[in-house]
Amino acid sequence: MTIGRMENVEVFISDGKGRSLKAAKEFWAADIIFAERAYSAVVFDSLVNFVCHTCFKRQEKLHHCGQCKFAHYCDRTCQKDAWLNHKNECLAIKRYGKVPNENIRLAARIMWRVEREGTGLTEGCLVSVDDLQNHVMHFGEEEQKQLRVDVDTFLQYWPPKSQQFSMQYISNIFGVINCNGFTLSDQRGLQAVGVGIFPNLGLVNHDCWPNCTVIFNNGKIELRALGKIAEGEELTVSYIDFLNVSEERKKQLKKQYYFDCTCEHCQKGLKDDLFLGVKDDPKPSQDVVKEMIQFSNDTLEKIDKARSEGLYHEVVKLCRECLEKQESVFVDTNLYMLRMLSIISEVLSYLQAFEEASYYARRMVDGYMKLYHPNNAQLGMAVMRAGLTNWHAGNIEVGHGMICKAYAILLVTHGPSHPITKDLEAMRVQTEMELRLFHQNEFMYHKMREAALNNQSMQVMAEPSNEPTPPLFHKKQ
Image: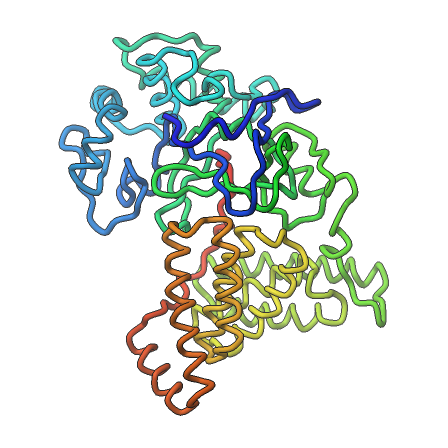
């Protein structure tokens, strides 16, 4: 069921894109254009025992279904709310004798809902789930092979007493999941925990510099305006992270979503000069730049290996050596330098070497600010982490400034009710109080800061992960 004011948008046919959404009225930054609950959704295989299968919140203790022992819930309320969607799944798991992967589970949940409600439009939906783009005809050899495996497994899992669907219909549903599966995050928005299908969101096309963003909040997605949107203007989101040169983004979009990006940033190569930025005085030769790119890639491979083995001091050593060599060739907006700055600031924060981490975090944020849309959610999260690192380092003025900046961004991208925005507001209030005290009485400030650290009112960074930032749309690996 869709929740929100769907009269805010209209479906139209866009040249070269097919069905699209446009604004039915004017919007401003932070406006919620529409909200939508998932048509169907499942928890990732790796997190089925740690995340509620109804609200997708991570919990210390979860109750499991007494019948299949597979589904986990926060409490009886979540379990009761899930029964309509879990009832058939519960019986199917018991009959099949094991739990299939997340793709099979999601396809089955979609088709059980189709069985209940039919294939037409459900309440509040602008498009039926089986009319969403599936691109099965564009699948490569490996994707076709995996599709055949998934369909075969699905047929073994699907109960004989349920409505029987054609092989083509089943294949199309797997294609819909592949192209439209949206990544669901936990309650704080920090970890990808599941995947869902949101039909109305599936009508929103991609732009590398979009006018909207999508956030998962309290069991539903919200399409939020990033700035002023005129009545009649097409609504767009970015399917991938902007932080790459236009040619690489186009390749990624073609490979994962089967279309050629024609957005202004890709057509004109906007910001590519910054992504590949090198020093001007003296300007390095092309050979030197190529050698530095190769050295950076080789170092990143070594870093990935060291991180996977938990050798974080080795990671820091590798980053320092690489950054020292990069300094004479790259500028701070260069992708290779930004990657190093991001890794070393994250790992040093985890090792609680906050003073050095804060230096690299400031440089990273300065680079990001020149590249990202000013209201980009990933920029907001990066600025928040950098502000927290600077707070831990005792740089109260810089830390407070960054936390305020991050708060302003997340008010637009996440909204005031999102848990991470609420956390950030608490940080902002605390650092504002500390900054006032710092200006009034530096001695008392340091005493209060020591007490605050002992109370751990602000948490140290989590253990670094090799996992990249989760993409907006979930692609099966």
